[in-house]
Image 1 (spheres, rainbow, N blue to C red):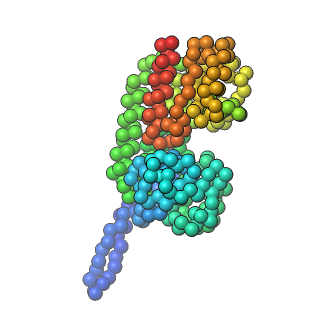
Image 2 (cartoon, rainbow, N blue to C red; image 1 turned 60 degrees about the vertical axis):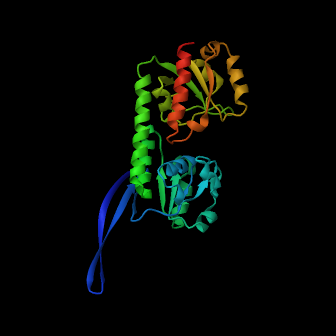
Image 3 (cartoon, rainbow, N blue to C red; image 1 turned 135 degrees about the horizontal axis):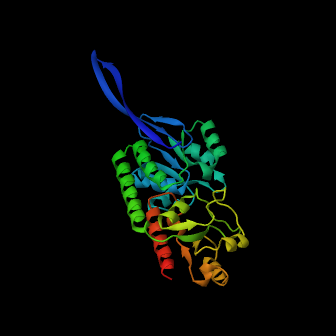
Length: 297
């Protein structure tokens, strides 16, 4: 279920010196991607982010000053680099999390896993769970994080800006001819993406047709024979692949492939597209230009 939020005014009645005193507190109820409703009477002041994309989204809506710890590789914006690291690919430092006394931890379901989330909640920590898979999820989380963090105008503004940028790209490339694309996520094992991955939506935005869209797993392992059989017009290689230029050269030598024969093998800046953040637009612009170059080659 998608994150949603509802706002309601709660009127609190107090008495002092025989005079009735009223205080209106604005509460936010947000439903996370597990479908769990979480109420925020006040904006959280000590937030821990357990994924780089969550860190970036929080800073984007003006909540960076409330972030007290992040996960490894939370390197954007630069201010996030100075924050303590409490999580990595191997797991979460629960003791360190407890020491930091967070009033909210924001987790990524696929990246952190249910076991970590359950453990945090067993320790009495409030956890908001995200699972962004689409451009619309980025827009939604910008708005929801703004509401949670007490900066709804900034969240709404950032969400609207992202939506408009995506719409502009879609309008620009919607009329162009489709190009089949193989996106290489890693080398050993050779991995790609299916249609549920946000990068696949990005390819579609640019007029690209993901040749492994029909696979069941989000990031399936394939082999060279699979790639040759599907014979994409374009091969895009993530810049995170080790020795990426050498890998590109190896693909170019496989002249039985259309993409190699026409030199349509490109390296893409993974930092811009591997995270579900507003910078996806920059990554999309880069990939759209590469696919456009392939059309004219």
